Image (cartoon, rainbow, N blue to C red; front, top):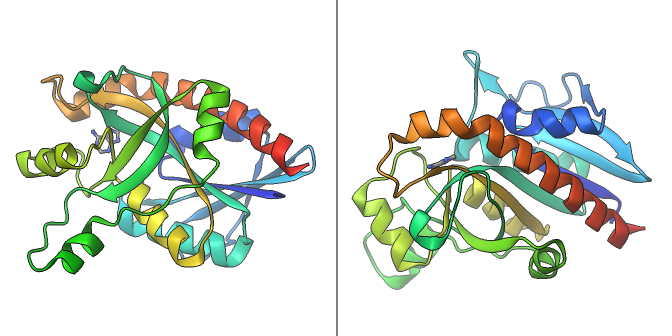
Length: 237
Ligand code: ADE
């Protein structure tokens, strides 16, 4: 492995480790697409961060922009591994805490309710493979693992919760399964590194809780990603 590529939705999520590794923006690399490329080198390994980009002054969160970013990253950069790193909602009932970092052990959609036969349902839910080294990494670095479930909204409707519960979901985000879908098409390994900003079962207003904890969760993400990069570097060299 010589090229690690992060796909990240929000500037706040990526900024701490962009600064840590002094990686630079490669201007207009993906133009006219909204995604942005940052590139640097860490001990002989190329480190890319692809951000979803912005529209009307706000980060393009969600599956559409994550799909564009991941497809562009894979086709233009040919990474050995994609890491989807970012914040997520967690569940207090399943042991989540604010700023706790998880490694994903599965990924699926929770808001695609398509009636029909088993084939439609299976395809809609996704359930894409994660990198087969994810578990060893999590064990070595001491992170818990959890199943990432993805939808297009920050809030959680009862019908979302039903699917999340049914399928053992632990981490609720807005991009993971889209990134996983594209990686599955190209058979590029995907690792999920997620940090909790809000507890979906806390009764708090999600956006308020998310905003209040964003900084703390992103700091935890930076620490985790430094350790992840060190670990992967060791496997590459
Ligand atoms: N990102 C951070 N918190 C989230 C939540 N509760 N749902 C979806 N994406 C999130």
